[in-house]
Length: 265
Ligand code: HEM
Image (tube, rainbow, N blue to C red; front, side):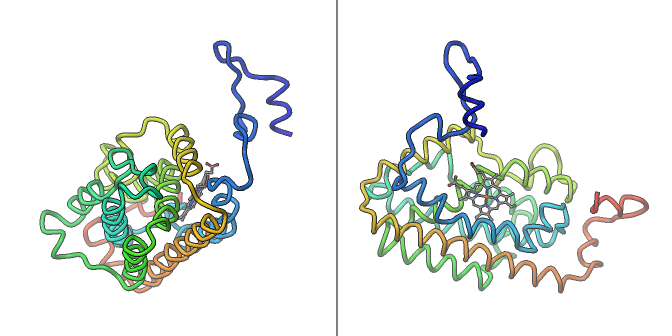
C-alpha cells in the first residue's frame, strides 16, 4: 500500500520525511469536520464529476456562449456567498474561515465578465432560475443559520482550489483565450501560492470550529445540498447548450479550415 512504502522509503527532505498520503502526516479523527465533509460528500462529488456538462467541459467541449453563462452563474453565486461571509466574518462559527484576500472571487469574476461582455456587462447579464435557487439558499443560511455557510464555502472554495488549474487550461485551450489569463481570472488565486498547503490550513481551521457532532452533521447535509445546487446549475447550462445555434456561437469567433477539428483534440 502507498502509505507503507512511503513510510519505509521515507523520502528525505532536508532532515524531514515527506509522505504522500495525508493520513500518515497527521492524526485524522473520524469526527473532524474536514473528514466528515470529505467522506460525507464523496457520493455527491462523484455525481457532480459525472454530469454531462462537467464531462463535456473536461473534454474541452465547451462553447464560448455557454462558458460566458457559466461565468455569470458563478458571479451571482459568489456575490451572494461573499456578501454573507462579510456579514458573518466575526461570527465565531465562521470567523476562522474568513480569508478574503486569499479566496474571494467576486472581483475576479467581474474582470472576467468585463472581458466577455465589455464595460456594460451588468446590463447584459441576469441571474438564471437555478442560480437564483442557490443564491436564495445562501442568503437564507447567511441570515438565519450562519454555521451552514461553512458548507457553502467548503463546497466551492475547496473545489476551486482542487480543480482550478486543470479547468483553467481546458477553458483557455477550448476557447482560445489569451495566455495572460483574461476571461479565466476566476481560476487564478493570486493570494495562494500552494493550493495544497492552503487546503491543509483550511481543513485545520474547519476542525478548530467548536461544533458538536449533530451540528457537524448538519454542515455535511448542507454541503450535499450545495453540491445539488451546483448540479442544477450544470443541467440548466447543459439544456441551454442544446438550444444554442452554432451560427450564433461561431459569430464572434470565426472557425475555419482544419481549426474546426481543434475542439475535439
Ligand atoms: C476535491 C477533482 C468537480 C468540489 C477534488 C480533488 C480532485 C477533484 C482531484 C482533490 C482531492 C484532494 O485534495 O485530495 C474534480 C474533478 C471534477 C470536480 C476532476 C470535475 C471536473 C467538482 C465539483 C465540485 C467539487 C463540481 C463542487 C461544486 C470539490 C471539493 C473538494 C474537491 C469540495 C474538496 C474535497 C476534500 O478534500 O474535502 N476534486 N472535482 N469538485 N472537489 Fe472536485
